[in-house]
Length: 86
Ligand SMILES: [Zn+2]
Image 1: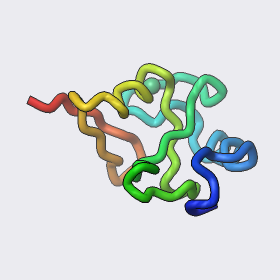
Image 2 (image 1 turned 90 degrees about the vertical axis):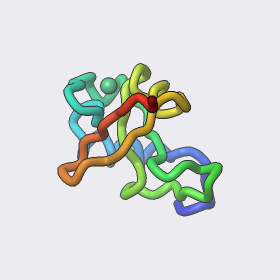
Image 3 (image 1 turned 135 degrees about the horizontal axis):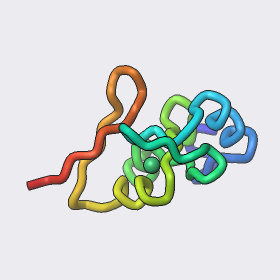
């Protein structure tokens, strides 16, 4: 979808649920149907709505991803690590 859509469309969310079997935060196993699709490259910073930039996060970890007190990074094996800034 690139920049054509701000939000992941249903077929993209379905593909993410098939690729990613649970919340992608380290140590979290929240089922995919309870997760949101999150842009790793923020939309506001010209991120694209593409599968490679999408990651499933449960509501708790999605809030952390948007909390400026935390940074998050995708690890080489695909999970997302959160670190408190301080
Ligand atoms: Zn989670």
